[in-house]
Length: 69
Image (cartoon, rainbow, N blue to C red; front, side, top):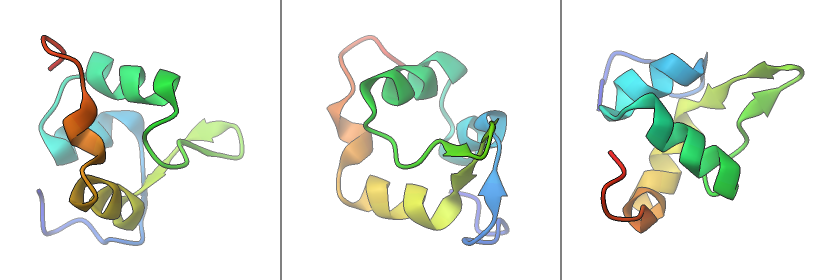
């Protein structure tokens, strides 16, 4: 994961994809399942990198179905 992104910064949907090195539809799948933490700030889709890091450490990203990348 990119070390240069401030862990408390709110990042966009595309930035989450870049940060985790995954495709957009994978993040959208996680959002639909409500498995990824807090995808909205007000009306915008924003994710806190610290929350994403913690979610990944707890194995949240490992529960994706086969073929989703």
